[in-house]
Amino acid sequence: MNHNLLVWSTPDLWNPIWIVIGIGIVFAVITLVIYAMRGIRKLVRFVRIQLQAVHNLHLYQDVGQQLDRIRKLEYSDDQLARLNTLIAQTTDRHLLARIHIVRAEVYEQIHQPAMAIKDYQQAIRNHPENDTAYFARALLYEKDQKWDLALRSYHQAIDRYPAHLDAYYHCCQIYFVQKDVYRSLEYANTIVELQPDAHAYYNRGVAYARVDDYTQAVADYEKTIELDANYANAYVNLGIYYGKIDNKDLALQYYQLAVECGDYNIDMHYNRALLYIDLQEYALALEDLNIYIALEQHYGDAYYNRGWIYNEVYERSDLALEDYTRSIELQPNQARAYNNRGLIYLGRQQYDLAIQDYNIAISFYPDTSKYYVSRGWAYQCQQEDELALHDYARALELDERNSQAYINRIALYKAKGYRSWVIHDYHRLMEIEPEAVWIYFDCSWYCLENNDYELTIQYLDQAVAIDPTHALSYNNRGYAYQRLKDYDAALADYSKAIECDPDTNALYYRNRSYIYDFQGETDKAKQDWHKADQIEQHLHLV
Image 1 (cartoon, rainbow, N blue to C red):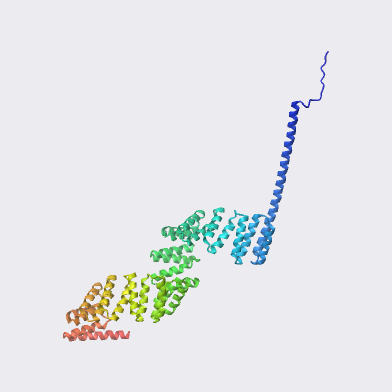
Image 2: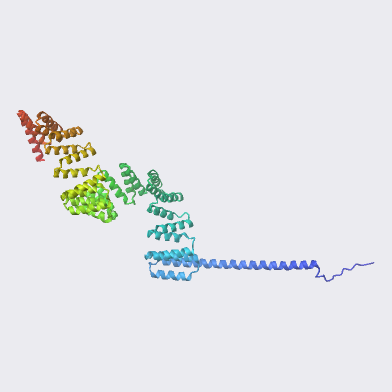
């Protein structure tokens, strides 16, 4: 019986199979070691990150607390010293940015804007994605009226924080200052899109008004009030708008609503004063101007308008002179203030001072007709007739319908005896104001003084055709007929004068009394004479 025995023998290690298995095992071990090493490194890195995070947290908290303590101090060199120390000790770039921003704020408070800007720039270098430093730097540029630099910084802030409303508001204002009103409106629209609250609509309403789109402006002001019924300045602007379109009652209503809301723009008082001037409510206008000037002492137009009221309404040329002078101090190119102050000097017979003011007014606005008229009258008062005539001629070159230039020149022509030129200028006035009775009457009076009775009658015919109740024209025409010995026509005109004005002018009765007496109607003559005495006695008693 044969038995097969199992015998273990040493494997042949050089067998290719065993070689492959060995290599596989080696690679497996190496792979395990590599992954183990990677895991260990990741673990170490994770631990380090966590430790750094804890360290950074403590560091941020510590630096934040120090910054808070520094902010609470009075702005001083001690603050700067502490901040300098923090900067030297800090390596974290984001923290450095925060510290530079705080130091910039300190520099701002101690009025060193250039140093503040440098710190904001350092903050930007350390943390270029933080919008705060860009915005703060832009504010300083804007304050210094460096508009382009300010806009660039505001835009950089917006790039990093697209919903930066304050940056949009400032851009909106700067573009307005630069007279780019349509670009300003674009930013106002963006603000409404980002945050459609009352202030946004009010701001856009202002922007629409700047481009003369008052329909949209009014709509936005009304939307403002819908969102906030106590938004006083929206009422103010609506008042200004309705005042401009001559809806004065509605304008006053809106101004009153603004006052009831309180906390309104003081410009309300100035604009309402202008409205009251238009309404000839001068006491109310003066009250508003006084309030406005007490709150805003550097607006020349307010002094000018108050000066006008003092002079024209209250005849206080002393107060008017002070206000016109103050207006000129604040706005040296305020030509109308020079003109009106010159008129006061003229009234005081201070002709040299008047001419000096008119010269300045003309230097600012050489194409303004009325300034030449004013200076011409000053020359005329000084008997500088040729200079006066030259100014009147220049005034009429600039404005051929300037009535005052003709009136003043007529007075000069009368004094020099230039009769034909007097009549010529009266005719020009008649062309300018064909319905003005006083022109025909004045011209007739000049003719009457020169014993030209037929021409007197001709002009008075036109006067009574315009105003059939003008008693003095009938009286003077009656006198002209009387001088021409047309007594019936004279009697008819004196009677017509009495019909138009039976109780206030004794002259009409005395003139008719002469005609009655001449015609032998003694009783009627005595009655008229007695009536004239009664009128004069009554007027004397009054």
